[in-house]
Amino acid sequence: MMEPITYRHWAIDIAPKAAPALATTTVLILGRIWNANGAEQSVGNAALMVVLATGAATAGAFASGGRSGNSVIAGTAFAASGGLALAGVAGYADGLSLPVLLWALATAVAYGLAARYWRTDRREEVAHERQTLGRREDHAHVERVEALRAGAQIEVARSGAAYAEQLANALITRASLPGFNSQALTDAGLPELPAAHRKEI
Image (cartoon, rainbow, N blue to C red; front, side):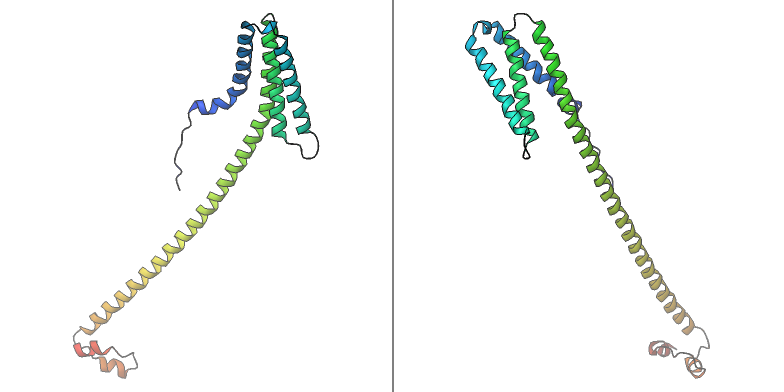
């Protein structure tokens, strides 16, 4: 069985790989925009960012602890905490060097965490492809065996029909021979011809 050939656009393959860099870059840009709009002078906003980042980190710690820990919730909470911390530093830092350094660090950590999930997804995808390929091979084998069996049955039916046709032709040819006597054959112990052939003679 031929499978349809599908082509995936290169953007579909690159988009998940670019997501961590796009996320940290977006946070850095928004933090710098916030800085340009006077974030350095707002103590209340700074306190709010500290409280939000600490709260997200605490939620991540609670989500990852214990037997019923959820890794997805914990990862999301820690990512939110890191994003809030990066946005706070980008918004309140005087220069650009510290925000860029933290951006590079956050991007590296994000890629490190994402690589683990990408490897897991790749392993699951390969296992699924192998399982699917095995099922296809099994089905293809069954289809080949059934096709061979059907072909053999067709050939047997054809050979039986050909034999019956040849036998009928032989009987007709024998009955049409000059001097043929079906009664003499019967007296000799040979099988009797059907009544239709005897009437023709």
